[in-house]
Amino acid sequence: MPPSAPRRALVLLLPPLLWLPVVLPVPIERAAANQEPSPATESPDTGLYYHRYLQEVINVLETDGHFREKLQAANAEDIKSGKLSRELDFVSHHVRTKLDELKRQEVSRLRMLLKAKMDAKQEPSEQDVQVDHLNLLKQFEHLDPQNQHTFEARDLELLIQTATRDLAQYDAAHHEEFKRYEMLKEHERRQYLESLGEEQRKEAERKLEEQQRRHREHPKVNVPGSQAQLKEVWEELDGLDPNRFNPKTFFILHDINSDGVLDEQELEALFTKELEKVYDPKNEEDDMREMEEERLRMREHVMKNVDTNQDRLVTLEEFLASTQRKEFGDTGEGWETVEMHPAYTEEELRRFEEELAAREAELKAQAQRLSRETEALGRSQDQLVAQRRELQQAVLQMEQRKQQQQQQDQNPPPANPEGQLKFHPDTDDVPVPAPAGDQKDAQASEKKAPEPLPSLPQLDSQHL
Image (tube, rainbow, N blue to C red; front, side, top):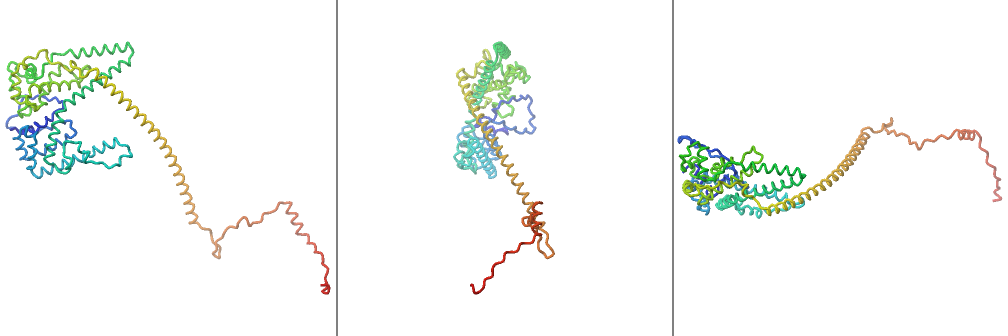
């Protein structure tokens, strides 16, 4: 089994970590047999919120010889049923230690995500409420929340089941996202036309029709997986004689990592030539978002008709069997592109526009509330600035008084020769001089002798 077999076996249960629409070149030359195998490339992001945790668990498990051996011998049913998960009890101690640490890091990360999410929804007065992390962690199904410290067989089983289910739903989620994108584009187009005058609107509609006409004028698009489509790749990309087309050789050429299967990324690389017939990033009328939706539709078509066991991998036997069917050579009018299959109905567009209007009203109300809060904060800030100035003034006055008191303490009044303190006489004890006229009268009265008192008769003691 090739070196990548352990990972490929695990990918049988986790639909390949290759969902993102990445176009890869198709190499023709193979490395010599005696060359060292090239290092495995990092798997593209699956889009799962626990992608890093999933990838790290897989990487650690592959380092254990016992688990890798069991993985090579396991089939998809063994992995899905949980039988492989029980082999976790026999992996080495250092691998279990690494898995335990990965789980603790994941639990910590989820707790931070939960807190951030709750803080965003709660009012400031409610953010001190105690959070029950155990119950909240139960909404994450890719680990066992009852045991938050060690990685057990149950954790591996839950991770496998959750990733399998979530990745299987990826295509449906992508189609729904594309539908909303198309409805938003149509909504904005109609709003733009309504904002124009009659003459301007007619000119804009004429320009749009011209762009649509140019977009529809393209060479015939072959049905993905058909003989015509594969021969075109064989001739134009592989540079081989179309009259000597060989399905088995074609399969080997495009099995990029030589693991015996064509995964979804390897299949999507085969559609590049067909997509280039319809979409050119230099053309204003060609929407690259529609091109990625087209790529996904092509891959789904091939998987539906070729992947008979629905494991999202095409084996050589499945590929050769598909070339023997009647549909392989009979492609009819060719492939019907996205614009021939509207992504939405008028009723869906109407509901979408109502949703947009409600969302717009909600955002407007929030903007008004934030504006009022901003004004209130501005007034509060002005009040705080005024209070700060008052406090600064009071502190300054206190400092001045303190300095004056210190100066008085450092410079006491001088003392007289007897050691007594000299004090300045009180101004209240100094006589106030009289006016000029009053001073003359006073001087005259001082010079005038006082008049004698009248004499009293002397009484004889006999009269008493």
